[in-house]
Amino acid sequence: MSSRRSRFAIALRRLRLRWTRWSEPVLGPFRARWRRSLMVRTMTITGIVTGFMVLIAGVFILTSIGSDLYTSRKDAALQDSARATIAAQRLIDAYEGAQPNLVPLVRRTVQDTSSSQLVYLRREPGQAPAADAPPATTTADMLLDAVSPELTEAVASASAPQHWQAVGFTADDGTTAPGILVASTLEFPAGAGTYDLFIGYNLADTQATLSFVQRTLLITAAAMMAFIGILVWIMSRIVFRPLRAAAAASRRLAAGESDARMPQQNDEHFDVLSEGFNDMADTLQARIQELDTLSEMQQRFVSDVSHELRTPLTTIRLASEVLQGTAGGLPPGQQRAVEVLGTQVERFELLLGDLLEISRYDAGRVTLETEQTHLVGLAEEVVDGLRPLSPSEIEVRALGGYAPIEVDPRRIRRIVSNLVGNAIEHGEGGPIQVTIDSNAAAVAISVRDSGVGMATADLEHVFDRFWRADPSRKRTLGGTGLGLAIAQEDAAVHGGILEAWSRTGIGSNFRLTLPRGEHVTSFVSPLPLVPEGVETEDGDPQATGGWLRRPGRRIRKDKRR
Image (cartoon, rainbow, N blue to C red; front, side, top):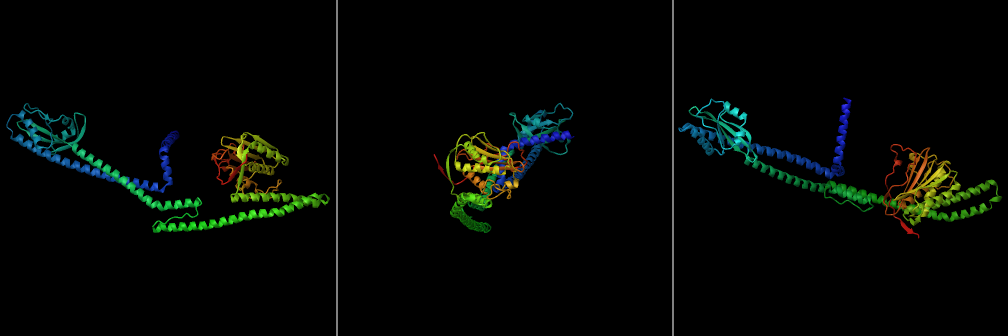
């Protein structure tokens, strides 16, 4: 039983897969449109309900008309057959000639009296033979096939003066037409016995009338459905017009048009929506203006303070250099103080430089001085400059990236220097690996260390300004806390992306991916973000390796030849 159920489940699953594979190209776009558009759902539901109602009404009307037509033709056929039977029986009763000549006279009388020319007259089966009994006669051979045994038995029972049956008349050319066959009996004189009289009524004209009614109803239903569809579409457009206006106004607001407003809709309910939306837009515009003013004031403050601090900082640095020149005759404690003063003055200068750079990015006044640059050579220069300061072994693996690309070498050198410096800072003396590779659309540089790593919660803030994963850790290379934030901005102005992967106890990997040109809008990084040999966890958001899209930046580029 279990194997039978499993086979049934497998067959059902295959059938479902086949249906999905067949229907998805046809129904997939409609499903997506159905989920996204309320107007499509409204029109579809209205069309289905209206079509169902039209179908029910059409079936009812056709059934009623067909039943009435058939009943009226049946009643008329029974009355016509009864009149012809009475006339034929009167002729038989008054006839005094030879028996063989009576049957043609009866047939002619029935044809003259009734509206049908389909007459079949035969001696009723089961009677004793009679030598002078007239032979059977018919006006059409198709009547012989139309007489069924049930109708013959019903006539022989003599339970009613008339019996009828719905039949189909097949012509010589093979066409079939509906009809009614009415049967009655005639008593012939002088021992000839009882004869069965069958009169056929062809209902082809009634069928043609019913077909005409069907076509008329079908055309009317199609026209009605089209009219209802157009009406529903017009009403839907009218009803959803305020929603479209609100959506258009919200898109304009999202695009930065602070003066976008929703027009009045000449409806008491939607006008309340318009007024509320416009009040909200006014409030948002006021708040955005306030925030823009505060942001501009903050940027100006940072820039002004940074510039103003340069003069006293220069004086302090000169004084520090003088003190360092005379530190040989000072006691050891004072010599240490002079050394610390010089180190902190240098760090202060770096901090001021980073603050000025951040203020330029915030103000959108970044200028790129691009030139053709070999990233392999640039990375090797940075590593050679930092190798004396590192207790770790730094390896440069150049898998690609030898072809030059147009970048600002100063900013790319600053990114690589920052990444390698952070690896030295947090690598805990472990090996550091700098890898360069390229493909047809992008060039990538990754810096991998095997230090303490970071948790996922810390990794989300690694590019925040002045953020540190471990505030108690000292800075051996004199960082300012703005390095990764500036590096991310440097990568973005080139249309590239700077990403980070880290895991506690395993280490970190930072990957810089740059497009090969401005025409490249999406690309795949040639280097993996998760290092080789590290198993990815289920649901790990850092394990993505799909298409990357270059961020949009408004910058000015100066090319150096």
